[in-house]
Length: 552
Image 1: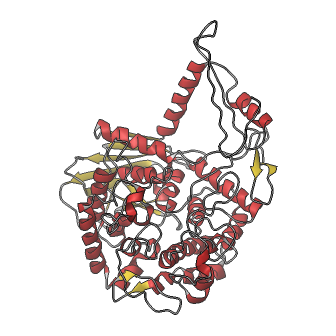
Image 2: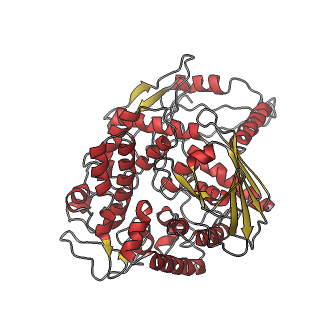
Image 3: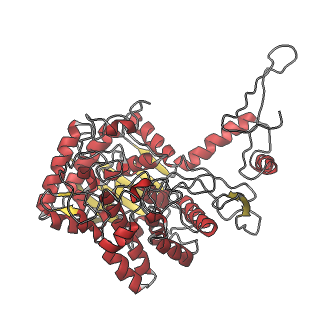
């Protein structure tokens, strides 16, 4: 057989076990999106020998190098096993599509074109080109974890996203096979790129990135498309967003013909947050007019808050509220969520959200009540992504099985009640992210490492509510589950060698942080700046079974 093709094509390889056939068969598989010759060249470059034991040893060594970037001690054996499973997931699911020589196939146009990535002086590609699942919700997952522990990976993906822009005119949010999928909603790549820039990962064309992101936030960019909307630009509702400051739900009959995820109020909240991150980028580049413009747009979330019901609520094209309104109706204006979950998606302006709700005390009370209810449901909508739509699971106010409400435990820290963050984040970890069972290890939509990344961040007790998109961004301190956590810092990007978190008196019954010191200096705050972490040092957390309400 020299080749096969077609939708149902496949190849079965069998070996004759009789006669003179050797008892051991060795096989290599080379993959290339470009050509058969490149597939052979990839094998020659990446696996030139036939020593199977060496492959096993090298693979184990390679994965140990990746996973040992974060070393943990303490906790139970199961907690450690699950932690490294989570970290392994955080590095999976996003494939390299360029070849060893830097060639790749651009499929963003009407025909496939073989192109070349830039090479260094030794002929090695400066970065890899990637497939990726959507960056939807990545501000709370890989956009925090990768720059911290794997900045070169974050850099590679930034340059890969810009390569798509140069080829097809738009930065993608979920590319596949060298083309756009338009999966999910919004301009979710914006927080990812801005986060990298703010953390000092700037080995990309910054002006090109800014220009491309501005386009994505316009009627001509990816914000205008919603969920696999390949051939139109209506489902994103951008014209309404630009004219009215919100996206109606439902859209008009004509606009509703296309786009899988047309969910007006949910999209409005996403766009507002992403506009905030672009405003921060503009400010850092001294683009004052753009800063003012996108900063104003970032307040659009207020246009879908209904003070009467206390929830973000679908609004019709004519500006009237949806009636009747059920805040627990699944996908009622929110992608893969209900309005009760989606209401908390104002990470960039928690003070503003609190003001809409009547003050911080009311917000805290409402959020705690939501957690108490979600606790009875295991903090997830069933044990699978498909369960979310079932009547018995769809009405949970917080779902840690999908991205829309995975930031909620850390909202308490943003409004001055970090002890509640410590308590509830530990509860979520124990309930949702501790099992080793294949049937309940990731309850919901794991999304190619996003939920694994979230679990890692919650277990080491560092979380960025805004994805690190401000100047010298902060990490809220949660409730680490290990005695020691040591992060090896990449000297290509950061000045420190390691950053270590040590906990004292840690255990299942001591989720609260009683006292904090950084490099020997006591702190009365429950957050660290990015610069404090990447400069290296030691954070010591004294844990307790009682909250310390004097730490803020």
